[in-house]
Length: 198
Length: 185
Image (cartoon, rainbow over all chains, first blue to last red; front, side, top):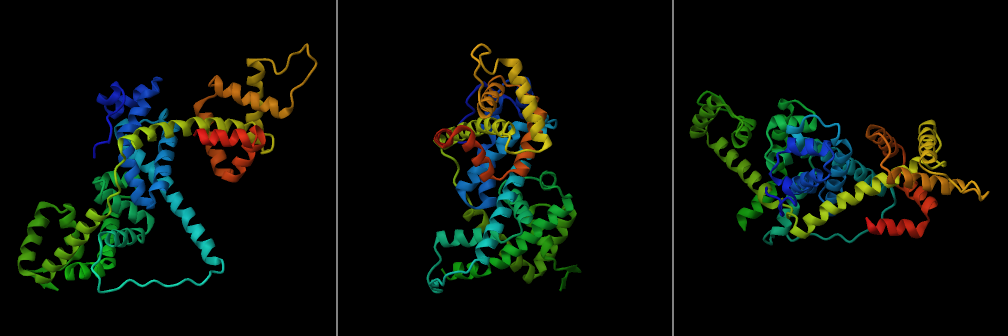
């Protein structure tokens, strides 16, 4: 996917390896060009991973901040974007861990009774509801499986690239993806029925 | 269930949609699908699952303003990080050999870079003033080996909570300045 704006400097013609080398030789602008090139992809990945757009923006910013600190020692320049994904994944997984902890703490506190709101079963499902059901179904996947599904389905990375990012074998990535699709299919079963009636 | 000598296999259908089957396996599955209604229907259901997921879970891309702002935010956080980390390293409140070593090193650098107080005046700066000035000098002169900074950064990120960092900065530069700094970034 193209970035919303063009790279701000003459560096937009250079490939990743050249930008990394420029950065290592002291051209700070090269880092900005890397951010501009990948910010949209990284932000969207973070968004799908953690769900909340504001939190996703923080995750994406953190990823670039961390990348800045490590870029000087980065050697595999041709794999720059998969490395950025890897950093984003680690930060995103931490956010999910913290969220899980917060939910756990909240659940441990005595809760106040709430009114239950039940959706009418015979109304046609709206786009917003459909979107939220799908997001929920994807959010229900275990974090690593979710990452594999997102990277394959939306970012269209190869199994090999994903394996490098999540730190698993290609076979494990393939199995994780299949498992995620099977789970989604069963979670979304009700949605299909409503869709077909609609 | 078998058809045309092939077992029905949902994962093979997912692999078909994922385009990760070999040509030979794809040809075999195509033959199986002609004869197996259950697999045909399963394939359609899987296809719908993926189409729904694809169309509905599309976060909006950044606008040009957001995209420009993003680079600035990243830059601001890098600067704030370096600034905050050095202030924290130089704080006596943290204790611990590693941090103390960093404090001593930074102080030595500060001494090498400029006098702490006017020797003729007979006045001495407070410990906090020295530490704050040292932090400024170190950051301002970009002194420090990047690997060491990374190591210290990792150490601090692993050991200090956000609240600890906030209190630390607050005690060093005061609440008003801290809020202004946060506002800026």
